[in-house]
Image (tube, rainbow, N blue to C red; front, side, top):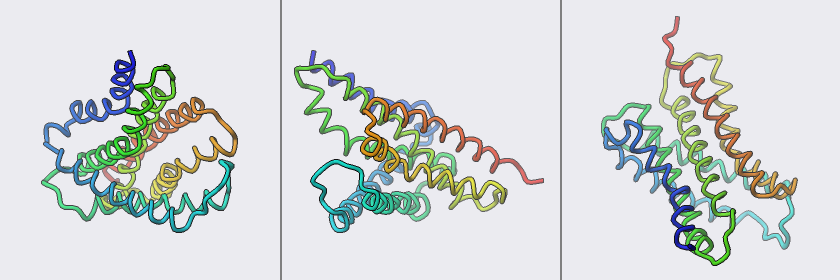
Length: 228
């Protein structure tokens, strides 16, 4: 029973990444190399973030919300944007379109994040004797993070790779990218500042990811229309 629970949680956490790769043209264009390169950039970015967090953040004795520390953490979190910029603009890939590039980069980035932050807790906790919904909710949270990461990669693609775009949508692109990039700080405030339980936070993340995916899709569509 415990092994079955672990398999279910692992499938919910990592399965959508494989489904996304197989169900989209990414598999047809063999973009696995792009996903792997993006995952490596993610690991490097995470290492730099950990060094910055250990250097500049104070160790808190309690789990209360500290505004100054959270703002500093959000500022360090923008290193993810720098990492995505490097992955999208500086790495060399085989001849793939911009649409496939940002999807492959976002998918590799999100998969590396899920593997790094969720595999060990699943292996230790989901195999326990007592059933808990926490690990299923972590799988749902991983799916929300997948959508948010691909949305952020799409917004970065519009900002850094697309030369011609309507000037009216540029501020919206920047605002949307800022919202997605600061989502970890927003959820941290909900958990520690407003004392939301984990299920409410996950439902918020899932709703926010779907909303930002819709906004990103509309922005992408607007930028692809031929200018009059």
